[in-house]
Length: 424
Image 1 (cartoon, rainbow, N blue to C red):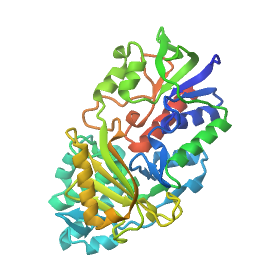
Image 2: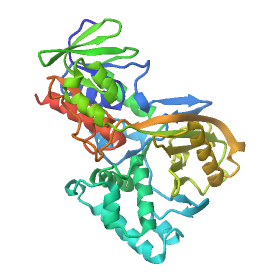
Image 3: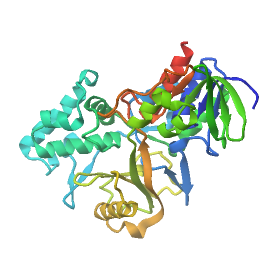
Image 4: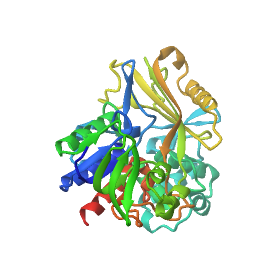
C-alpha cells in the first residue's frame, strides 16, 4: 500500500469505524487497519446452529453512542427499544420482584413499606442529579453518606452494576456512574440480528465514503520523529504513510506500538488502567420453562440474566420459537471460569427449572473483557484524545473514556479524536 493517508486508524472495532466515518465525512482520506480477518472487534456476532451470538452481553443505552449513531445517519431500523421493564431478583435462593419499576416496587418483598417509599424517592433523586457537578467521590462513599437502609443500598449497587457492567463500588466515581444509571433507566436498546448488524452498518457507510478497510493486517509500530507521526509499519514490513494516527487498541498494546512510549502520557494511561472482565454464558432454548422470568438480577450474587428474544423483531434465531437467554457473571481478579459457569447454571436452574432439556445450542466465554478501563478513583488523568508528546497521535476506545461507559466510551472517544483532527 503506497498511498499516503491523512489518517491511519489501528483497530476496526466500534471506535475505529466511528472515527473513520466522522473523518471521511470531513473530507479526510482514511485507512482502517484491523488485525483480525473481520471488522467489529468485540461487537461481532457469530451464528451457531442458527442462533446469533454476540460476544457476551452488550448494552446500548440512550447515551453518547446511540446519539452518535443517529448523527452518523445509521439505519435506525436496526435499533429496538425496550418499552417494558419487569425485572426479578435472586435473594437467598428465592426469586422476588425487583423494585426497579413502579408496579414491581409495590409488589416486592425485598423492602419494607417505609423503605419502598424511600427507594422510590431515591430513584427520582438519582434521575434528577446534576452528575457533572458532583464531587469526585466513590460510589461506596456516596452510598454511605446518602443511603441509610442496608437493603436499599444493596439494591442500588445491583442497579449500578447492571447499568455499567462494572462491579467496583470502592473505585467507581459516583458522578459518571449515576449519569450512566440515568441513561439505563430512561432508554435501553437492542440491535436487530445482533451487534454484527451495527458493525455492518458502520462498515457499509465507511466503504461508501471511500474509507480503505484492511483486515488481517498486524501493525508493528507507529513511526514518529521529532515529536511528529509520519507513518505506520506493519509486521509484513509494509509502511503506510499517514499524517495522523488513531490507536483504538487496548492500553498495553497501544504502548507497545509506539516507540519510546514510556516517555509519553501513554505510560500513565497504561499503568492506571483497570480492566473489567466477566464470564458470559448464552444459551438457545426451544422454550422458556418459566415465561415470567425474562430479566433477572442477582441481588446477593454478581450475576445478571436476560432473555434477549423477548424483544419483538430482533431475529436472533432462524427458528422463531428459540429463545436466546444471556447470562453474565461479573468477575474479580481471582476468578475460576468453571466455577463461574457452574454458578450461572445454578442460577438458571432457579430461574428456568428444566432448562437443560430445552438446549439447542450455547456459547460460553470464560473471561470476556467488558472494558479496558473506566472512570475510577485511582485515575491520574483522562486519556486522550491527543497524545500530547507526539503530534498527530490520538487514542480512542472504551478505555479512553472521559466518564462514558461501555460502547458510549468507545464512540464518544472516537468522536473526540476525529473532531480534534478535523478542527486543526
